[in-house]
Length: 124
Image (cartoon, rainbow, N blue to C red; front, side, top):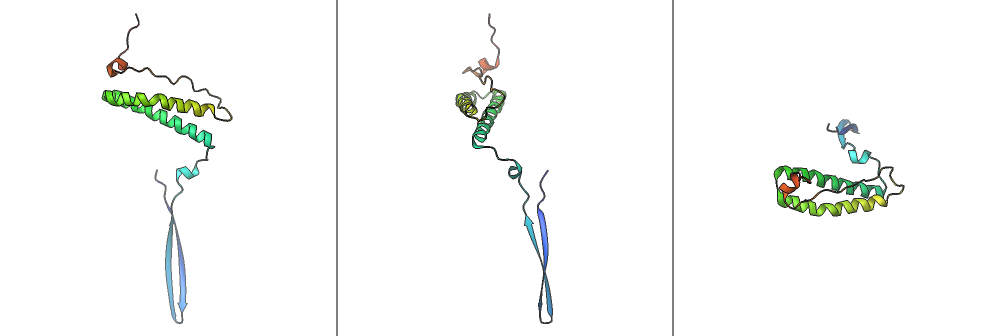
């Protein structure tokens, strides 16, 4: 749903001797953006949310890369992912007060060969 801008029209009249002029001026006020309506988070929580968003985006990219069988991009994303996990864990620990939920395990199996990562290996 697109927000609709507010239009405010004002009629201005001016009288000079026997001539009366009327001017209508309309002003368009932009709609409030969704970002302006959201409550602002404290700085530490905002940084933790950004780190979590980054990690979720990397995980979504991993699904896309696996579907494309793009091994080079898969390796690059898996190289960046541990740094994103460390960043999230570091920022999660600094939150005050601590959230009631724990992060849990953010590990992912990695194999340099994309096919080796996708196909399960039997553990005999």
